[in-house]
Structures are given as structure tokens and as C-alpha cells.
Amino acid sequence: MPFRLLLKPVSMDEVTLVRQSYQLVRKDFGLEENFDFEEGQIGFDRLEEFLAKQVNYLLDHDLNKLLNALYRIDIPESQVKQLLHYSSQGEIAKNMAKAIIEREKQKVITRQKYQP
Image 1 (tube, rainbow, N blue to C red):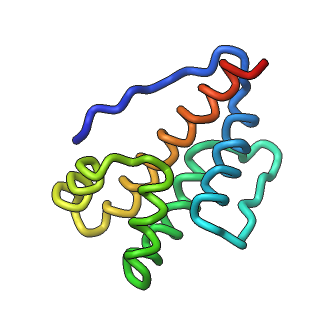
Image 2 (cartoon, helix red, strand yellow; image 1 turned 180 degrees about the horizontal axis):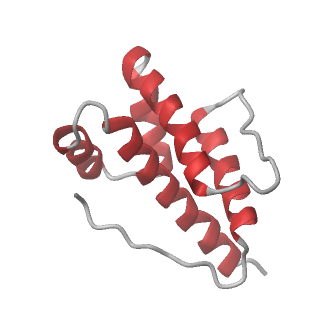
């Protein structure tokens, strides 16, 4: 499995991090569907589950759109190839969702850190 840097936010609570990460995912994938942010149930596990369904659909119906989104998100091609090659058939969407969320979290944290 590829090396992933796990970043912990310094001044951002998880709810804000999840919401902002979702907004980036929504923009990058062109999603119309809203992710339901219910109080007490907000977390990256739910976002991962939601995103895995989106990724799985694109894997089956529009691989080109998925690959374009991964490029825009800045998931390295080598990581995508590893995910496709080394993940079991049932785990590909879940592992891609994890990689996407991790990258989007990095973007949110970096923007927060360098925000004036």
C-alpha cells in the first residue's frame, strides 16, 4: 500500500475539516448530490462511505470522468495504478475514496495554514 502522510489539523475541528473536504470533493467530481451532515454523525468514515459509492459508480460507468477527477485532485498516477493493481475488486472504490479524502484534507489544512 502506498505511503500516506496523515496530517492532524492544528486549529480546525473535525466537523469543519470534513465539511470543507467534502466541498472540494463535490467540486472536483461535479457532484449534484449533497452529503447529509447530521449532527453527531459527521465524520470521515461517513464521507468515505459516501465517496466510495460515487467512485464505484464511476469505475463501472465512466472511468474517464473518474480519472480526470483524480488528476484534478492531484492523486499521483502511480498511486492510482497501485490502487487498481493491488486492491481486491471489492476494495478499489473504498481505497480510492480514502486516498481522495486524504488528499483533500491536505489541501484544506494547507489553505487554512497559509490563510491571511
